[in-house]
Length: 400
Image (tube, rainbow, N blue to C red; front, side, top):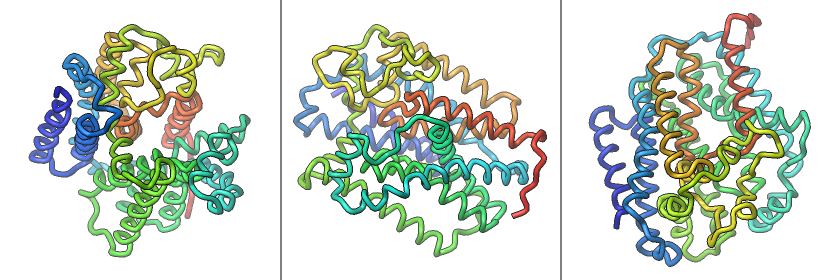
């Protein structure tokens, strides 16, 4: 029962952080991993597909070591993050306008498919998506701009809370919230669950980050957020029921949320040596002919079980670097993040990396979500864009 080490370790860390810092962003991330590991334990005990998987001590220790090497600097920075020194308001207005336009382009491109999607059962919508019938997959300038918009969505949602806390400009609030829905829009057309979960986590995370600086949340806003979260949870429930049957829906949701901590041990035993050397997890950094699509892994690697399952974001790295290489890579990330968050570099750059580091590790209970080339490259483009807009080089002032 080595799998019990997961909730034990996460539970202890969660209680320690709650005692010292309360329910903040770092506590929320630990809570996600604690709940996910609890679901993993339940799957291993009661789900027929997971009972037979052997959980080894070596795999659990390796997994926890790599996880905390990456989580530790993020959690530490989250515990010390301060907005006492306000960021450049005019720069944030520039960023809000420009990146929202990219995100809105993605929503606008989805609109023609809404009627077709909502007029059919979710199972049929999912089948159409697999066949490429609803979500736009064409390659071109428009698709690249939309990809940047998808990358910008988490930052738009953060800016929504930032403007709500410090600036209170209604035009920006409406614009930013709508723009933050671009990933959800595509997710609904795909009858998927991942982006819904991701959006709910971002919503809670950014609220907790800025909660100490909020005077009050108006009752209409609290009610609206509650309705949004409940509605999205119902959507996840409906998608799960349509794809896997109406029986044992909660068990299937637990399967979705917790399988990474069971599957990791199987991946650890099977991928001791490196295979792709970064060509899968960081495909955007390689020429097209050398890239490995995560959906094609089963056709590239011949092994006795299905590989397109969740194994947490650390499990995603096993394909590329093997067990030893994944630990070394985790230590390198630990060193980079520790240096970044403790350096005298611009607080704005730290904030950007913190937001997207949190996004990666929160979704990391499933898998590493930047493995597609467009996802990584568009995030790099977004980073360069917002740094340029935040700098004094760009002087145009928006007067909304």
